[in-house]
Amino acid sequence: MIIKSVNLETVCGITSVLPQNTKPEIAFAGKSNVGKSSLINALMNRKSYARISATPGKTQTINFYNINEEMYLVDLPGYGYAKVSEEEKQKWGQLIEKYLHGSSQLKAVFLLIDIRHDPSANDKMMYDWVVAQGYQPIIIATKLDKIKRSQIDKHLKMLRTGLGLVPGTRIIPFSAMTKQGRDEIWELVETEYLG
Ligand code: GDP
Image 1: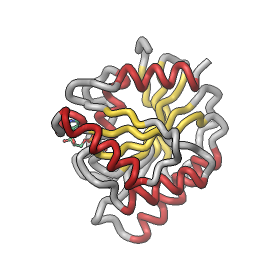
Image 2 (image 1 turned 180 degrees about the horizontal axis):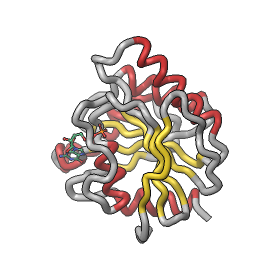
Image 3 (image 1 turned 90 degrees about the horizontal axis):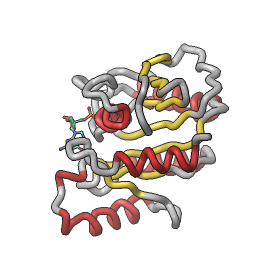
Image 4 (image 1 turned 135 degrees about the vertical axis):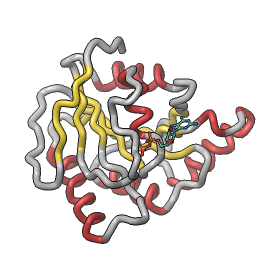
């Protein structure tokens, strides 16, 4: 994808009405600090347009980035931040559910998981939940540069088993540092979900 324009067009909180977009939407979910903002910035060729979390988990909004007036990258609020109250967790769930149910343009959900660690209970819950909403998430294994090359396969297997991925589920390893995986993600989006 050649990025010609990027615009944070809509920011939705719990009480907001969701936009009735007419262009395809691709959403990104993941626990706080997994590298979601870094990935979205890399996809947009921007250094710091998407928020890079100073206080992880604090902003509970869904952000819609209009790309080339052609499609949207949708940044879902992060989960699993320990200091969030029960009430905030509930609101987070309602907001995401509203979006997953309500969007008529959502084409795919990418779920980000840190390649270094066994998926957390929250990761597993998120995966199962997205599947229950009728989507087959594509997994992005983030922070690829933090493990040795020889360890990659082992870690990908660990993610597959830990999440209990449906056979055939795609996992794309990604590093925001080296940008490895970026082109593969765009290629997938362009061939499968756009046009
Ligand atoms: P978010 O909370 O999911 O949006 O995560 P951020 O994108 O803000 O990243 C959280 C932290 O991880 C930041 O300090 C990033 O610089 C770092 N980070 C994100 N992606 C990578 C990566 O691919 N490699 C490395 N080494 N660090 C990363």
